Amino acid sequence: MQKFQKIFQNINFYLFFLLVFALPFKDNFLPTILTAWIFSWLFEGNLKQKFTGFDYKNKYYIPLAAYFILTVAAFFMAKNSSTGWYHIQEKLSMAFFPIIISGSNSLIKKNYSKILLTFILATLSVSLYLITYAFFTNLHIENGTWHLTVSPYSSLEKKYTFFQLINIRQNIFSGGWLSRILHPSYLSMFNLFSLLIIVDFFRKKLIHKKWQKIIGSIAILFLLMMIYLLQSRAGFLALAASIIAVFLLEILRKKQKRYFFAGLILLALSTTAILSSTRMQTVLKQTIGILDKKETNLAKLDARFQTNFAAFQIIKENLWTGVGPANMYDELKKQYKKYGFDEAAEERLNAHNQYLETFAGLGILGFLSLLGIIAGGFYYAYKNKHYLLFFLMLILSINFLFESMLNRIQGILFMMLFYSLFIFMQPTNRQPDSNNQ
Image (cartoon, rainbow, N blue to C red; front, top):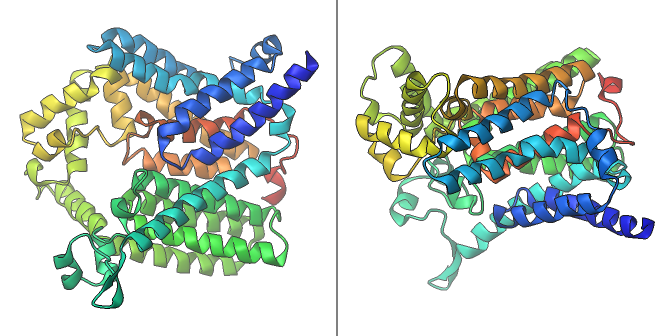
């Protein structure tokens, strides 16, 4: 029996690392890996100890469980039962990830740093693959010389410079043209979190040898470059907020002026990158126009404003119960048609804002549950001086403003995997962050 358990402990260990590594890749194989990992956890045995040993009254678990229960309850509002079941399956990780990761075997708990390193390597691998793919698939011989096509439209290539094409996301090395296997906002988020893990490794002196410092520094610069190339609005804002937070924390920790000036330089560079983005300029211009009440023609606004406005209308009409996650698109479509949002209707856009998506779908209780998850993460990070959890919550709370992240398996798995890892698992070799504050 012990031999049998040992085999499944090893299987569970490798499947968990495979799940972490697969997360930044295309999500086709994630459900299969996830299912195999859960079954291996069950076959390890000691189920009574695993389930009874978990604190279900844990204040950090309650909002997660509440969100899942509300999703299950909303199933009875679903006009399409298959869509309702899909939403339940999608949110299962909110209820069970904390239990499973809390009951992880000793092999996983002993390799906490390697779990984080695996995610960094996966993100770097995806980014390197995409850069390489974009380069070699657009490199060809023309009149006996090698030529690199940098835009999918030859007319634009003649009109704009390389960097201008990046800023308008019409360069093969930018936006969706570059991020072929997943949404640019998600890859930007993964790149930023990987970057911050490397920064944390530097802080904890897990990177201390000269060659490690060189590789770590190159990786940070590469990840910064990828965030710029992806041209994600959420990615830019999360990067700027993270830079400010990193250097404020370092100033408070070491009280050295050099961090203040280094932070100002990096913040200036990131601000320049943000303002040079045509998409960000459009958002800023339209936001100012809305606030000044100069822009009143909603049909002319950016599609994200239209989806947010439509979600607001649904909330106003269904404040307490919501319309149910499974019915969200039908309700949004009604609003799109009502206000003439043709682009949003044609592209079948969701609310593109997790706060609004949750409020419109699950009502005020669902919205409060989501706020409870975020507030709980920030509070745990503050109370335990958990550096990476703080930045995870910062990145998520900003990305939630631009994407309905919990509607995608990669979004919800990213949140729940690291949220559970940082709060509910007790690693045997993790260096406490309090030593570094």
